[in-house]
Length: 162
Image 1 (tube, helix red, strand yellow):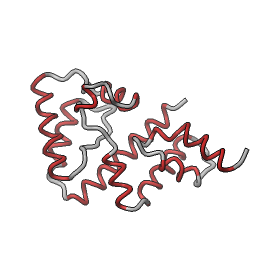
Image 2 (cartoon, one colour):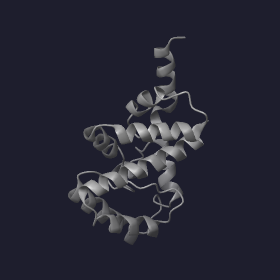
Image 3 (cartoon, one colour):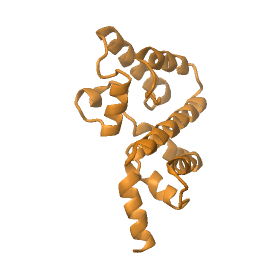
C-alpha cells in the first residue's frame, strides 16, 4: 500500500472528526504515527492551530448553530446530533429555545461565525451562560476560544471512534 493510499484511508476513517473539514485529517496524517488516540487528537489540534487564519475561520463556520435550523431539520452529522442531544439541546423548553436562537443570531452578527462550544458534559444553562459571556470577547479572542472548543470536540470524537 502506498503512502497516498494510507493517507486516504486515514482521511476516510477520521476526516469526520473535524466538522466538515477533512483537510485537518489529511494534514494530521503527516504527523503520525500516533502513540494513541489522545496523541492523534493533539495532532489534529496542532494542525488547526497552525493553519492560516482563513482555514481556521472556515473550520469554525463549518459548525452548526446550536439547536438551529439544521438540528430541527435532522441535517446534523451523527456526531453533532449526539453531542447536542447529550446536552439536552434537542428538547429545549420554548423559553430556552428562544434564548438559544437569540444567542445564535447575536453571536453570528457580532463575530460572523457560529457559537462553538464543546457541549458534552454541559447543561443548557451552562451553555447559554458561556455563550452570553463570550459575546463580550473581541473577535480575535473569540476565534481563539472557538478553536480551543473545536480541539476539545475533536479529542472527544477521537476517544469515541471505533
